[in-house]
Length: 379
Image (cartoon, rainbow, N blue to C red; front, side):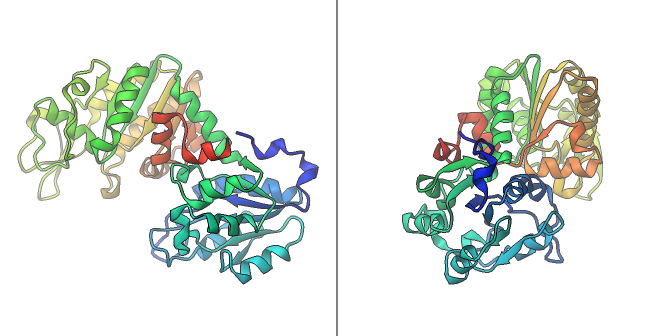
């Protein structure tokens, strides 16, 4: 996989470069961008290209509905530098704007998913996108597990390179495939069946794997503990997973009654009316020595129901990791949108925790397979 900085910088001047970014960011109630994490990470590649005189054409999708516009992203990106929004993708407006560009200028085209061909890896749409530029740059790691036209179709038609975000993601997550020991993986999530392959893989290469979030409920139930009205998955974890000596399950849990009262309990004390909403302080204490000794930690998924405000024990684990990072000798890779959002609320600076991946599902799929369709397209 070649990175864009492998092109001699002088050769970028005047070239039209199509950058597939991932600017699918959360929006606030006011219709404006609520979190600029992905924008800040993605801007590095765009800024580099512009600085060296490339005519940079940025494409991305946003939201779940095709009718959503990417225009609010342009307003947010203007905090980083000059960028022009074109409300078109491959039509006359887009073609005209890209042909009229000057060296160093940056355009952002409309939401890719307004064209239904984007999700179909459509050859005609790939050619129309490729015709806008001379070079293609993939910087959208978070959707590199999708076989969308802009991810896997366009690289077949243009000289293709990874952007800085993509390069860093692959390097960091490749290290996570072969962690230094002692190593610890912390895995959360809502559906055990989606995390089961990753957990099994981690149990083979990590010294310890701690399950948190709703998937911990499945393991607790598998061990014979009551879970009340807690969220559980359709497919229960296998016995060999629950009984693996490397697996760490919560030693205490935070429960919420139907009256919205929260209590910390031992797993065996969970009542039929209880809903498990987070781990408890004893579980944090159980993890503390593993974190203190670890040389590599991979973390994907908050410990509690983030959307309901249960982030205190996620923050407590983050504080332990930050102290260990400050001491030196620990490499930490953290991913998942809710995980990163919860950690931002904790107030601990990103640089004190390690590498924040922009991918959730893409991160886990890479850790399972060692590659993604969007990476293979570049190779």
